[in-house]
Image 1 (cartoon, rainbow, N blue to C red):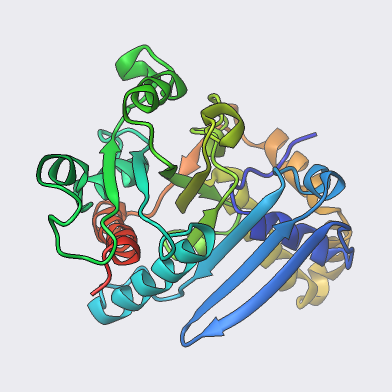
Image 2: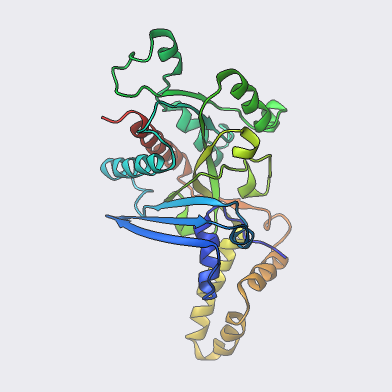
Length: 314
């Protein structure tokens, strides 16, 4: 059966809400903050993990409808909110940490360049603290931040996991923060949503290109993943269009019966139908907004500022 591709736990949860079904072992908390909404999906049991198709842990989704705009003040508020979420997931205010920031993705492919671009804007401190001592910046806590952009297998011939493990052996950080571009189910969430999770990440999973997961089990240390959906499956766009068409049909007397027939199809049945109707080239296609160059540039700065604020406030 065809599965809708989404990296967002929030969208996986919405699939059950449409059917008025509750998922045992999954807790949801929502909070409004101005023009932003923070939703926490906490998967507490193995049964909940199996139903959601995601590992146990916390998935915090920050939805900002105007994030695609270039309002600097609004993006600064998003960065502050991201910093607060990171403080919830990591003991940043309790002790000095050594953190490795990993920019996943391919710098040469714009929708996949989010991770490398974030690293470009990061405040890197490990080398300075190691040379001049822990009071080099005159801060209460001097966190050692290092970074790496491991590229993709086609560029390096190595798994991302292999590269990062080699770095871990030499630098021994306390935490990893991995940044990657994601895939969404809804076009409305493209470049408008940030997901932060303490469960790690599987590079390339959003576009069906699964690599070894980066998580506590594989790395030996906690992995916090940050991602923004930059692409959506072509089948999703056709499905959304079909739903709009059904609504229009049901409002037109001559086409009312046809509209009702299509609307009675289950969501999975609609996706399977669309997948079969589309040509092989189209049903494997992912789509990104036309202004993705500017969006990735702006959003990478927003995420890097959020991380910098979390570790270096003031």
